[in-house]
Amino acid sequence: MRPGGPGLTLWDPAGICPRSMEAARTIRPGDGLYPDSLARIADAPASLRLRGALSAPPARVAVVGTRAPDDYGREMARRIASGLARARVSVVSGGALGVDAVAHLAALDAGGHTVAVLGSGVDVPTPAGHRPLFERILGAGGALLSELPDGAPAARWTFPRRNRIVSGMSDALVVVRGTGKSGALLTAEHARVQGVPIFAVPGEVGDPLAEAPLALLRAGARAATAAGDVLALLGIAPQPELPLPEGEAPVGEGERALLAALGPRPRHADEVARAVRLPPGSALAGLLELELRGLCEQRPGHFFLRRAGG
Image 1 (cartoon, rainbow, N blue to C red):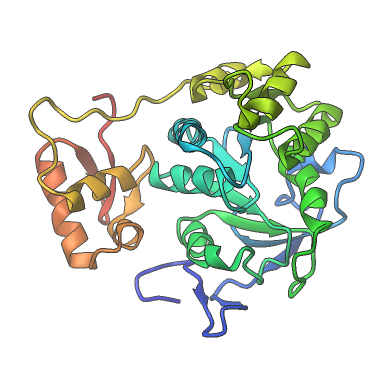
Image 2 (image 1 turned 90 degrees about the vertical axis):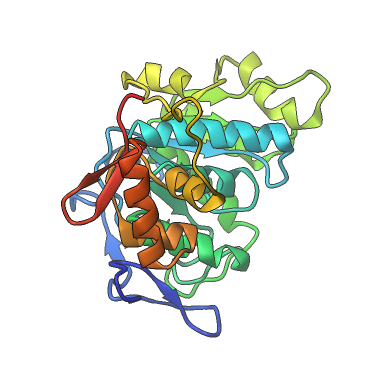
């Protein structure tokens, strides 16, 4: 465990197996950890391997889409996932390239909780380039989840198979971008069978990346242009992003990054430091400066959160 970082995972030099004080554990239906909604689907996994914490959020929402999004897709995934996380909704996705990664990162940047459902064992980072992302998810109190045994590599069949878990453990599904052959359509089909509400981000007719969302909208999916569209269905009040006081933008990029790393839930200064890759002392000094300027609030024990309201 890295000093000052409870629950943070360190990958071994070979980049295969994570080392952590908290090992992966097996969860099963009815044990208080296994998601109740997932236990109710027809082909629920008999058990899951879990690293980190699933927590008990007011709701979980899956945000999925293409592995090769355009700027519009990235911005919509970021906007929706960030808004969900600010409302304390856990953001679920598949840990893959593209929309999945954007959704996980946006939730983390908003100070929220996120779960990556992997198409490999929880000790086999897939894709390998997402090791830092998975480390950050665990360090921020999120979770990695898989029905595969430890050490299992990803295979072509494991990704479609895990999609039923992504939708089955969620209270709603948002499809951001995808072609007519996108795997997000398979996730949406699982959601339809499972009775999970489906949302799709509208796109321009004729745009290949709008094919999947438009097909879902034609089939009766709800349109999502912001997190509030999903939150309204779930009966959860949206939380506005903290605006900066007029004429008082942070002095430098370091302060901007610190502010972006804060959300409505308190985060320890050391965790914020890791998120923005600053030394703990520098991060704490910056957070105290932001507090003095009314941009964040401090709780006992060097925990910080964005100022409410704004």
